[in-house]
Image (cartoon, rainbow, N blue to C red; front, side, top):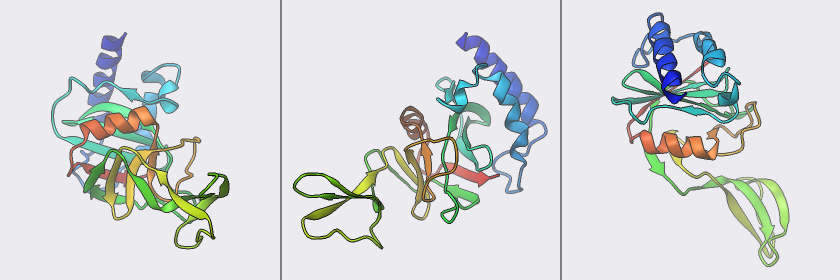
Length: 200
C-alpha cells in the first residue's frame, strides 16, 4: 500500500510540477493545482485531518510551502513531495504574512512569551484562558504561563511553525500550527535555513 501511494504521489508530483514554477521562483503561484491530492493521497481524505508523510527515502534540499487558502503545508525534498500536513494559520487581525522566508531558529521545547493563560499560582486554577502578556497582567497570587509551542521553527520574526490545535480553519495568532506528529516530522526533516513559502 505504501509503495503504491509513493508511486502515485511521484507521478502526481511529476505531472503537477510541469505546470508550476519551483519554490525557488519568487513568482506567485495558484495553490488550486494541488487540489488533485484530495483524491490521490489517503483516498479517504484523512491527510486533511492527520497528515501524510512518505519522505523518509527522499533526498535533496527541503522546502516548505504553506497554503493559507487550503490550510495545508506541503513539504518537499529535492523538489519531490514528501508530505502534507493540515495546519491552522493566523485568524482575522492576526494574519500569517505571505512571502518567502527561511527557518532561522529551531527549538523542540518552546513556550510563547506573548500568548497563554493566567492561573492561580497556588491552585493552578484558570483565571484567563486567552491571555496576551502585553495586555493582561497576572494579579496577586497569579502567574502567566506561555502556550506550549513544541517543535517550534521560527521563519518570520515572531512567527513560526509548531505543534498546536487544528480546528480546520485559521485560528492562530499568526503562527502556523501543525498536529503533534506532523510538527515533529517537519522539525526532524527541515534544517535551519530551509525555505518557507507562504501564499494562497
